[in-house]
Length: 193
Image (cartoon, rainbow, N blue to C red):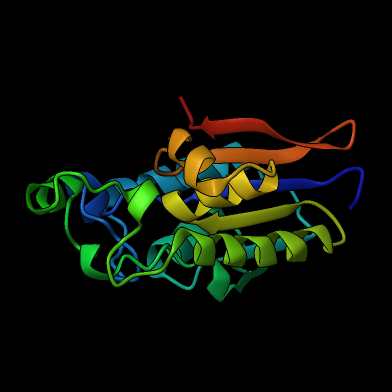
């Protein structure tokens, strides 16, 4: 592991489903007009910083955020950065699902007929390995739950417990880094004010 490891996390901008609270895993929906504005703000936060590796989820909301932020020319699509596959939860709100299963919890129980949190964490580990092998800092454009799980994996926490405690706004920028060889969250959930 490099002493100077830096992995920047950029969550995509707003979509219609982030507004409605619907779980958006593999449904490939675009940014809203406000989401495009947020992506431009994310670009201002990044301020043209150069990276040794830029990866984006294959889903258009992340790819468009990457493009608008100014990094599409250097970005590679990384399938492991796709959002959690929500199975039967896809397109539904937590409230709708709780009306049928009041004791259900996403972080404890996972999405029925979807991907387990362990499967998402395995994808996150592969992405982190790729970032650590990069010739310089890495920048990842991806999704809320996937990035929360990735951060939990980075700090060697149990994803089921740690990721649920890391709120992440649309078009936010976070930093995973090292402090005296210990994996830490250097900054979290920064948005342009």
